[in-house]
Amino acid sequence: MAYISLGTLLEKSGGSVYNLVVLVSKRALEIAGGQPKMVEADSSMKPSAVAFKEIMEGKLQYKIHA
Image 1 (tube, rainbow, N blue to C red):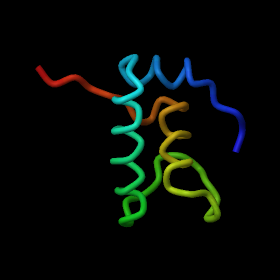
Image 2 (cartoon, helix red, strand yellow; image 1 turned 90 degrees about the horizontal axis):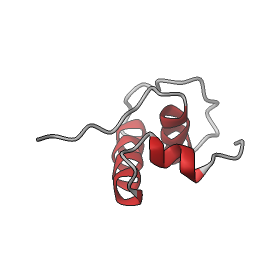
Image 3 (cartoon, rainbow, N blue to C red; image 1 turned 180 degrees about the horizontal axis):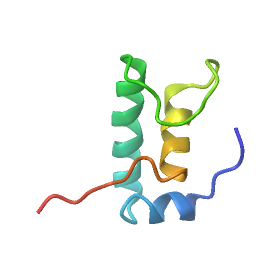
Image 4 (cartoon, rainbow, N blue to C red; image 1 turned 90 degrees about the vertical axis):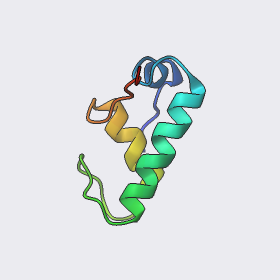
């Protein structure tokens, strides 16, 4: 997997490391549970790596609920 800038990931997850961790972990659990991937990834990629890739490509975003 290519290097992913933490700054870029934070911009796409509401600017919080906590939000980023929650977003990635929830999505990784969904992928591990059988949900389809939103990006192209080979079968050897771990669910968490796929979740990071989805965030980088703008397929997965953090939304603040008011």
